[in-house]
Image 1: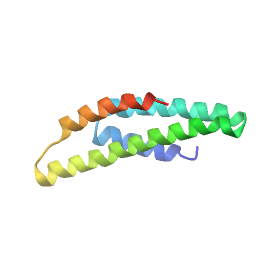
Image 2: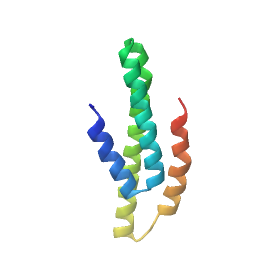
Image 3: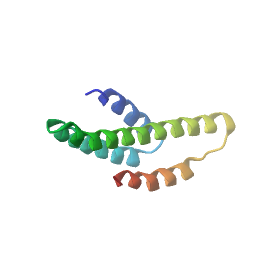
Image 4: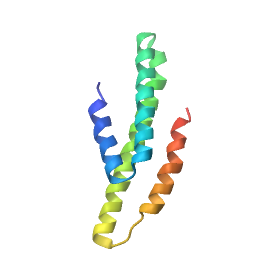
Length: 101
């Protein structure tokens, strides 16, 4: 529960500002990572570390999606240039990399 509010905020921001599909995929992966962390937490401390680190990696991906989405919104609003197609391509391709351990 320590990072659940952060997870909800960055999931919402990433889905709203950038792309819903990679954000939803990362959200599911985060929930599985938290389950792995919880199962490992019941055993020895060293068993919970992989789930914890994997969850933090997913959170950082969602946070990066938020930052890029906000930057794209500001670029469209003030500069008139839209990078949305390129960002969609990159986030869709990089969301698969979350499955790597």
